[in-house]
Amino acid sequence: MSRASLSAVDDPSLDLDLLASSLSADAGDVRLLLKALVTRLSDALGDRLSVERSGGRLRRRTDEIRRVSIRLSEDQLDAAVSGGILECTVSRSSGGIRIRSEKVTTDEWLRRLLGSLRDEAASSEATRLALEALVIGESG
Image 1 (cartoon, rainbow, N blue to C red):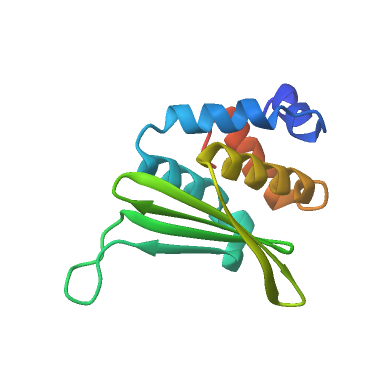
Image 2 (cartoon, rainbow, N blue to C red):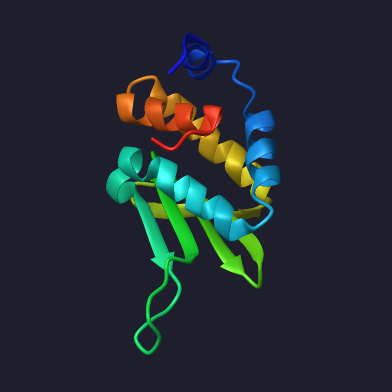
């Protein structure tokens, strides 16, 4: 990694709006966006990342992602593909009880996800590396 990419992630003024817009624009196909996020964040998030793939008991499971759920601190961020559109929800819990849930745009969902990852990256090497991969566009 270059020194520039390291400083970009460590910089608290990292432009999350720009990064979120870039991710959203680069992934005109919402399934590609979800696949890129899962690929780059799975190691850092571990069991806090849940992925539901297409297919089921009667149909063979595919690589196609249908739903992603990410738990970060007290927030749960869900994104589900419905008819080629990404439906995004952010929920807040307190003491294990969901106290609020709101539907948000894809850009807002990405901003919240990236903001939480940036906050966590201050104390987690794996999260820092995953966020760097998103910033500079590499996978691994």
